[in-house]
Amino acid sequence: MKKTLFLKTALAIALVMPLLASAESALTVGPGAATARLDFRVVIPRVLLLQVGDVGAGINLVDFDLGLIQPGAGGAGVARTNGAAIPVRVLGNNGVITLTVSNTGDLTTGVAGETIPWTEITVTSAVTSGGAIPHPSAAFNSGAALPVTAGTKITSSEANWTFNYANTQVVPAGTYGGANTNNGRVIYTATML
Image (cartoon, rainbow, N blue to C red; front, top):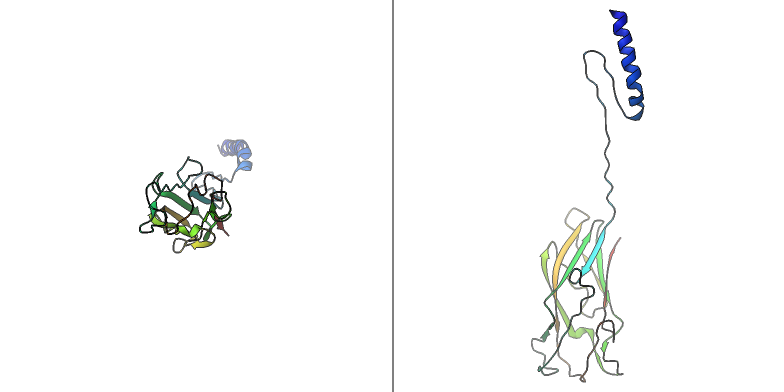
């Protein structure tokens, strides 16, 4: 009987040995427990997302058409005439994010001396989710750091930027700026160290 049990055990071990080589395992003959361990790892890459404008729309155009409004009248200024606010989203998972904006010069008609400075375009920001995303510069040419969620390295914020043309200067008639023409394009850059 003992000899048969020994042979059966030896045969069981021989059959199980190839399985033991490919994973951690334990074999217990008779009463007791067998345990095996398994390790887990999740690798999260650094992620930085900047969205300025409507999803899927390409580059948005912010258009101001004075129509019958008197140039230089000031007051409440002129609201965007081709849509509402511009959605903005910033997401990062590795610390403070700096948001900058740059331009190639004042808006122009393409004629020398006919310009509108970027300070004539005002921006207000309304939070829609997470923290604030203030517009980085009144002159559209500098930057600002965005806060991370307290105690983390996460920045996850959404806002709507509303643009307004101040209309405080009388300038010659014409179309100033445009779709990547006459200094009409600004570039936003998010940087995460």
